[in-house]
Image 1 (tube, helix red, strand yellow):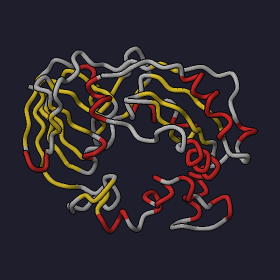
Image 2 (cartoon, rainbow, N blue to C red):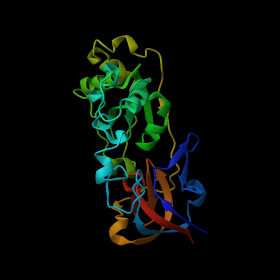
Image 3 (cartoon, rainbow, N blue to C red):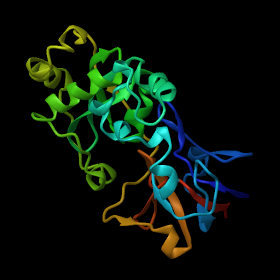
Image 4 (cartoon, rainbow, N blue to C red):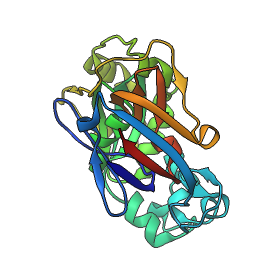
Amino acid sequence: MQYEGVLQKMQTEMGTPIQYYLVFENDFLNMNQVLDKKLELTFIKHQCLNCGLDKPIYRQGFCKSCFFEIPSAGDWIMRPELSTAHLDKEDRDLDYEKKVQLQPHIVYLANSSNVKVGVTRKSQVPTRWIDQGAHEAIEIVEVPNRYLAGITEVALKEHVSDKTNWRKMLTNNLEDVNLEDWKEKLKPFVPNEAVDYFLENNTETHLEFPVQRYPEKIKSLNLEKAISYTGVLKGIKGQYLIFEDNTVFNIRGNEGLYVGLEIK
């Protein structure tokens, strides 16, 4: 069976385990159903997720010119504390920025490789945790806009990491921690502007990923250089495909690559 299309991050559905879907323009594939099957991935060309042209991908699935022009790639995406829509100030497109920034946001703790703090739109819970490969997570505050979430994250990352060690996450060399205790420890450091939005009585969410075998020594696949790769799929975690020979392939990190996928 053959598929072809531009890579975008896999869509997910909460379950036991989580369900993953690779979605192309005219088709989709439930990746859980091809565990233990041999897959061949082939790089065909680039296709920018914005302009659709065959131009080298710069970041986030966009070519360089689109990355520095379109509103969905503004600096406030990665640094929410730079959000200004609540002040009626435009970065690249105020209508777009209001739509995204002026909605409920969550500041959370997630444990994927270690305990980390992060920000996401409320509508993206638990998708954001799944994408990060977190096996447990908890909300700290729910605020009405992205700016408040951003300044809360900035304050809390003085006391807890804001990064994930993706190699540690993929080898499953993890420890369970009590995130409710962590949340209480961090409460005194929530900024005054956000302290009224602190969530008092919520509990951890636990996530189960469809992994039959974790890699022992990770080999990261660069499909643009390799052009083609064949391997038996053994698991999916975060946005990574995990293969039998310890090769891993980051779907989200390769957005904008137009590929062929054959199930052998």
